[in-house]
Length: 76
Image 1 (cartoon, rainbow, N blue to C red):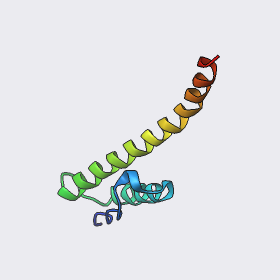
Image 2: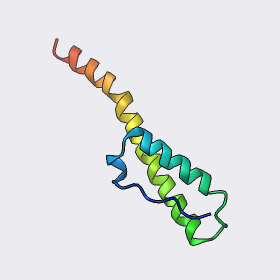
Image 3: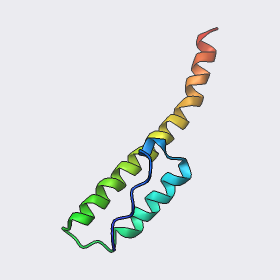
């Protein structure tokens, strides 16, 4: 199996669904890549980058309600 085509934009410029689909493509390509191959290394690196971007988006999403509540009560 070959390496999935890179998205047309940087990861932080992708819509959530595009990021999800790209991650799914990478995850499905991983079992087909031989161990200790350059392709597998590239797939694993890209998968780690996608996972980090998704985690960052989740952190921002979860952090915002608390930040808004803090700002609301800090002003009182």
